[in-house]
Length: 304
Image (cartoon, rainbow, N blue to C red; front, side, top):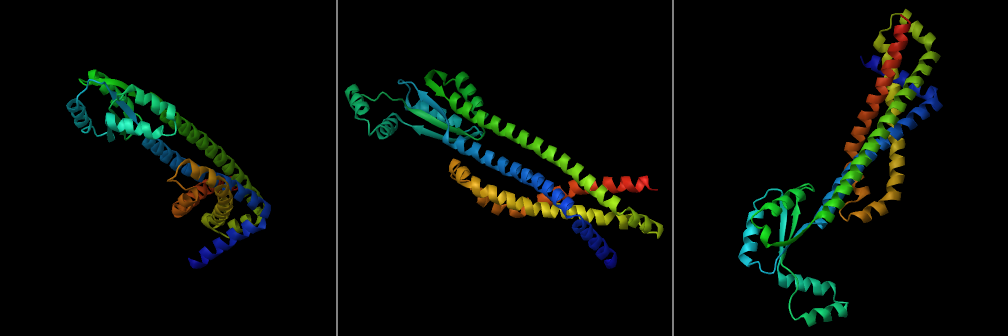
């Protein structure tokens, strides 16, 4: 069994180095396929973190009427706290709202002077609410518009926040679809390239295959070296993909890291290196071996 395995590995390696240009082309196609797949994984992770990050920065604001009492506000807060889709409720009193406004406009004396001339606090008490999912904002707004508390509410502002989140979700979903299409296209190209590469190798070795068939070699002994060769395309494709991704990571990291403070492209790639390598190897081996299996079976069937 060990000798059988050694011969298969040896013949597979010979096929790989015997046609260096074909092997290089097949490995390069694999590297593009793997790089795109890893790009999709990273893009998905980045977009999910980006949506959560923006959602934390944005919220639904409820502004109360001047005549509302503290007890009514507390009653609404208590009821909202029972909703499982609400992550956080921040109650801002009239006094706190005034202090926040003054702090934001401390370098604008005209606004502060106008505020002093009013002689009273024109700002309203409010809630700043963060939900667990973007779609929960609409659910919450619908409840507020139809609940018994609607008469104490002056204004609900979330449409702009929801629009921004929805736009980001839409862009990321479209981006994922585009990347999926690119992966599908490159995978199809890879199958065609590997199929034709193996066919060329088989054609150049047709006499050797005929001799092996005549002396009674099993089909597996004939097939397996080509599967090893196609696996080598995937392994070298992973190496080339690693070089491509490393270069892209160095170029894109400064830009990506500035968008979200809690996401580092390099750190993500390092932390998930084992998983990415495993997925890349499995994906490339499956694609390559499918093409190789079809090519060798087709040849053997035609030469029965």
